[in-house]
Length: 465
Image (tube, rainbow, N blue to C red; front, side, top):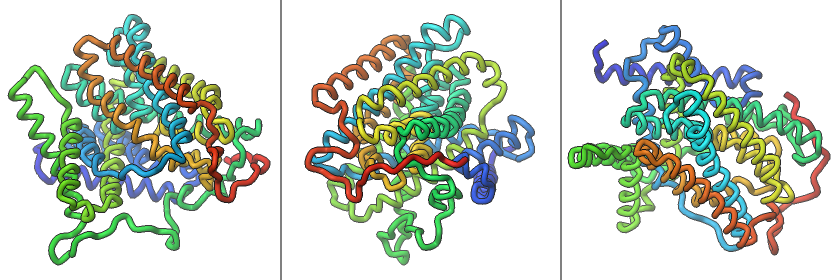
């Protein structure tokens, strides 16, 4: 099939049609509502079933597997254009506890997964040195991270990395939802989860994905006059400019040093930082609406997830089924231990709320973590969301550094060094948190601070599934 501009339009049209169908199913089918599966996951599964790798019914082009690699560049280029730091000293202890817990939990997943792959899976099954990274890439990282690191590994000779990363991410979402609901019902019986919300009492938006008319919000604010330039065009350009700059910069650097290959998404992120610096210096930030940037980035994420699952190659998964299953079972055990045994150490009262949210984003995504959080904390009395927004500002640089450098370090022969560095950094994070008194800080019990409307927890109710 000849590739033309219409090939791109056709692929986008097909995947968008699947996204619309998936959203309709989420709005109408109670089983899908109870699963909390995002429409992008369902669309991807439909694309996988009907696409070229299974039934070959839908006329996708032969480059359908390349879209996630491009979309992650757009997403990473938009990251520096995100929200500014907010907060103050009065939340430092609470946010510090969540930061150290999240940071240590994630880097330990990177380090332990990589070490398992090197020490056990490699000798037994002959998998590449980077195989153990699939756990963190697919679970804590998600589809975007799997696309980014997978493309970097492919450039260095591991052709199956991306498909396996997408598979790990898909399994992570299932573990997130099914495991999260099982653990929450268990916690309810023990009285650990506090107040639980019945499924039928959850907001319509959370159950069906459809926002009631009275509660709808703007997805962005126009900062320009349409008579000159549409505001959406401006913000799309602000994302595309650093993304394209990163692409051409990568080609230029490859020409200078052919033996060195820097991932395009990393260069796009650097170019985005430069653009944000220019916006700051020129004091034109008032013309940039961050909500619009977030909306566009979210759109790219939906497309990335749908295309990523569609492009999974079942044969590759089948060939690596046993080592992948061992790795993911290890990841499941790790996350259970983190939730049930580590979380209470960092947070006394309302520890389960923070733990189940972290379970969500470390196995699936922030969106699925939010869905689980809304079940146990519908009013956000634990302040998990606002604290995570601040804590993630510290987690993100380390995460980006790992995504960027891990393929280079591992393929250069320093996999054990990376595993050791991750584990050492996790230990240092815990020690610093202990010294600063961030262990055992209640989610809603900071000295001199009260939670509006807080009262004693009501008797637990099981989630009616």
